[in-house]
Image 1 (cartoon, one colour):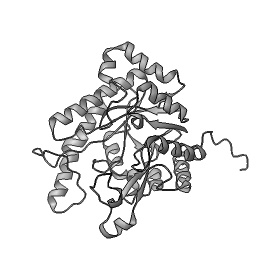
Image 2: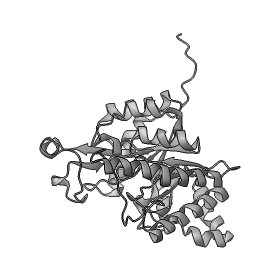
Image 3: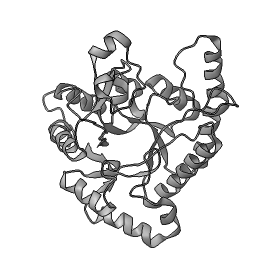
Image 4: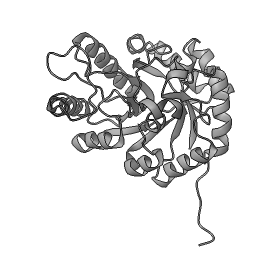
Amino acid sequence: MKLGIMMNAFSDRSWADALDAAKNLGFLCVEPGTGGFVGRAHTDVTGMLKDKSRLEEWVGAVRSRGLQISAISCHGNPLHPDAKEAGQHLRELEESIEFAGIIGVDTINCFAGCPGAGEDAKYPNWITCPWPPCFGDAVKWQWEKKVIPFWQKLSASVTGTTIRFALEMHPGDVVYCPETLLMLRDAIGERVCCNFDPSHLFWQGINPITAIRKIGAAIVHCHAKDAKVDPHVTQWRGVLDWKHYSEVPKRAWTFRTVGYGHGPDFWNDFVSALRLVGFDGVVSIEHEDPLMSATEGMRKAVKLLLKTLPFESAGKMTWA
């Protein structure tokens, strides 16, 4: 396996400075943002698609430092019921597909999206219960009329390429757990893959190790991000939480740096489960810890994962 970094952690730095920071922290791979909610702090994709010299300079900055691009990140909502917002996210996703093809990257990390509950909706509607019956009807409509047709069309658009869409399971999105990920993969095919991030599973009560074994070969990229569930909050009001991430003492759960939600034993099991299902790719650290700076959070995560990740092949069982 290889250790990577989601580069939006250094969105306040230039591309060259961000790459230097990644290199100095010991990363081998980088994952730049190319649109959607992640933004384009380091990648003016539109401009680079029009100017080959700028694109070559951008790629050259990565290669000259001995780094590799593990994937590009375009986490948006192209199914948003607001046509303007959906259109922007779709354009950025389509540009990201073209960009990935040119730079030789086959993995686009993204979200499946979330439509509204009907044609006249103004906002996305993430439905989490079947009753009253209107909720169940709305979920059926979302999948049959919006989700599956969209992903069928997008997948068909990359026929003849190696592009794959590594969906991140995320609450607020129609694909938020292993079941919904596999539902979409079954409907669309192997273009739909998984960017596995355990942090979004912890607070839902999903065991990431069980999830890895369930999803299996569909996992093509990973995010290393931890989460801490606060029992003092959940024991009286549950895990669902719309409070801002900055309100840490009041929240049911909070994103944490690797090792600060779950200790080394979990992360040992995590990478072992990944290898068990045949994954031997990039584990990319994503920093969203409100209690720690990006640099310190990265440093601590790197220290733990350098001890945990298996970097060599298992070799022969000489004892068996």
